[in-house]
Image (cartoon, rainbow over all chains, first blue to last red; front, side):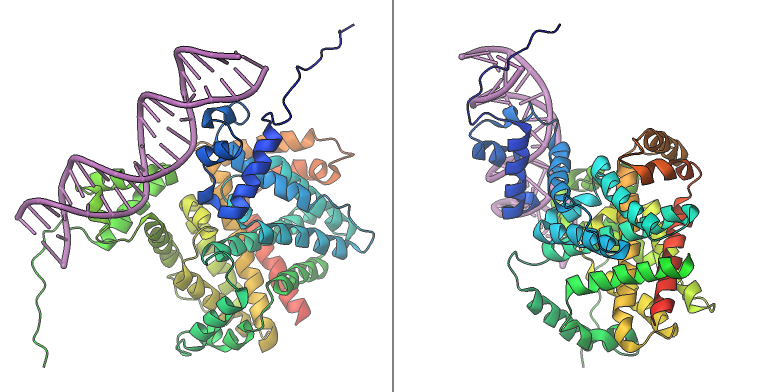
Length: 223
Length: 223
DNA sequence: ACCTGAACACCGTTCAAGT
DNA sequence: ACCTGAACACCGTTCAAGT
């Protein structure tokens, strides 16, 4: 029989991987990627930079853990009891809203594969694809298309967020882009010129869902 | 009348924005993002780090320019005279192959919006969407879905390339992932467990095209 | 076992000085 | 106008020393 080993008493403010990751998420939210340094993180946790290395191997691992933390929360909700289409939409919106709230996480998705979390998202999508009645041989491609679209939007939202001052009104940005596109030479940019007016009352979230619906329609059309 | 001003004679190896960007692309290809430093770049160009700042404002601008360079080449080919579907596939494959050859560029797409180049790609997609007969009000959403999917795959390919040693055989990686997925608990990961076997003879490029076809089918089904 | 903080090896960027 | 390279202000990471 193994004797019960008792952990040594710890100060309430003792360091832990969870506390470090939590503080990292808060710093990333507040100041973006450039705001997260081991020195600043250590200062916030009232310790030295070296202490952090006892709990995380390096900065990349910390960024993966921070991205995991926000994504895990985003997909924590149980699938509702609606149609499989609704479940896909709900899952996709969960990821969308998480990146909207934490743009730095969208950037990380194209840099550092957080394999277990990505697998969990893929699994959830795949289960709904199966529920849609897609034959086995076509499920992988269908789920991949959905996941890649979701990640593509995540990346673009992150890029958009980076390209403006934090707190900039999205409507102003869209209006400025709409003006720019309207002024393009219609001979060279017929499409952009034409859709410029649509940009003004464009809703990112609505547009995102329209893309999901387009892929769902494709899945249903092909299988 | 303005008098003809003659540029001063320049040494054949004089610095220029183009030579700097070209060298940066080569260094990124050879050694990845961490291999591109102003010191190493300056050494390669036989000058000091400060000289580069006369031609580019900072490192971000250099990365945008390098990404632009490879993407511009990727979409340089004129649209062929096939169907609009074929033109979309050709354009998408151009971006796919460019990121496959320069994975660092895929990472940049989620970090730094290279607006003129992105606009050019969006325009090209939009023109084909119009040629497909999609009504004006639905063109923006259709083109966005295609672009976001393409960028999502680009980002994931970049992430995959980063996560392995350069030169690693993709087949080995897929086999390893397939083993891992096959071992997952079927109760918790029914989908991943089921598709594990398909991973073994998975072709990234083919899969990418299948996703494009899915979105095209959705566009045709909905409009 | 876990923390401390100085020190190391780097970076991007600036800038006075040159040509 | 363009280049040089030392110097500045930072960064991730390590590690001997502590508790």
